[in-house]
Length: 242
Ligand SMILES: Nc1ncnc2c1ncn2[C@@H]1O[C@H](COP(=O)(O)OP(=O)(O)O)[C@@H](O)[C@H]1O
Ligand SMILES: [Mg+2]
Image (cartoon, rainbow, N blue to C red; front, side, top):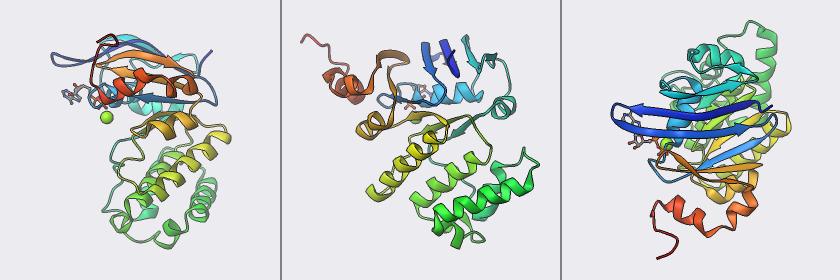
């Protein structure tokens, strides 16, 4: 049984069909990446899994429990977190206040303290700025903060929406190192990325969306070698037989 099982998922925004029957599975301990052009429905898929947009048809089960009609807080409690596009850290709060927000459903304050200190050790720039406003961080540091905050919810599945967007090459490397490290620690990851090469490099499985449908899915190495990936990703919609 997969940890996350999304089946025949449909989402509409008014008359716009954003997802029309998407199937996706994330096994325990896996990194699964979702690729596709702008507008393909990637963010909608993550939002639907979190419960931030209503599902029209289809189902979402997590660890065998049907979450399809559960509110977001119940899903977060079950172990699902989303690091949204554009990071959405609170720039008017300090670095540490942002981290503590991630732990707001927990009461084990000593463990929380230890986990925050471990984040500061891994990212000294965050530790040095713990009492400063998060707005003083670079984009890369803000992304690490957003991931650290999500980790403090003690997730079993972390969803990341285009985390490398706008980051310097150095931080892109740091980001993918961090994803690998968290995954080695047992975290399952659902990764939406623009950086196809890096995403396929870290993933156990890959799925490509086009206009709300799965058009390719399978082994990342096979997908990386498939010329149709480039087409789907660039969203040219060119027929294969022109
Ligand atoms: N809040 C919204 N209201 C109406 N349409 C939306 C909304 N969010 C996304 N869409 C539409 O849904 C489709 C999928 O968007 P999205 O999930 O953001 O794609 P991606 O993340 O792959 O770029 C697009 O056609 C987009 O215009
Ligand atoms: Mg998106």
